[in-house]
Every structure is written in C-alpha cells, then in structure tokens.
Image (cartoon, rainbow, N blue to C red; front, side, top):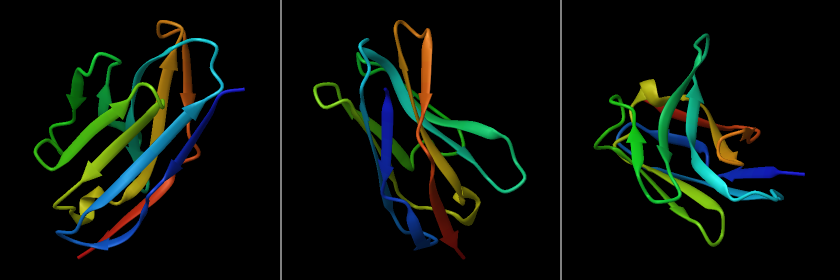
Length: 117
C-alpha cells in the first residue's frame, strides 16, 4: 500500500520560512513526478510545484522565486522550501506522487501552513 507521509507545516509570521517534507513508500513502480499542491479556505486545490525524477521542475507563478522544490530519488522524498511567506500562502499543503508512468496518483493527508500578517 502506497503511503505519503508529510511533515513540516505550522504557523509562521509573514516573511518567515517553512520546510515541508514528504516521504513516499510502498509502490511497486518507480515514482515519477512528485510535488506539492495547496488548498486555501474556500478554494480549489492548486499546483504549487512539481519535480520529475530527472529533476525538471514546474513552479506556480505565485511562488516562483520564493519556493524551491527538490527530491531525493533514492529515498523517495520531496522537499518544499518556502521562504518569504505571505498570508496568502496560508493553505493545507498536499504531497502528490505519481507512479507507473503516471497511471497512478497518490496523495498525502495534508499539512496546514498558516502565515500570519
């Protein structure tokens, strides 16, 4: 059974930093793209950043230059370093991992990030 375990959310003041980590396990297929999405109050779930197994990244315009995504293929982990946080970054952040050439998509349980002004 595939599991994605997230850690690192919390409460921070505007301008601060947080680091989110996600560890994936249990897949018989290699994990392909991994990434982070977020869902603010009353909003849809949106892409924050993704990274392929080869290291190619896709970062949302709203966080580009402030957030950095990285991964460790050997450990099946993905990290989102969030700097210069803004109140509008407040959301539940979800880790996502795809496997089997994209045929399978898995989600973590979500971790709350709250940025106070």
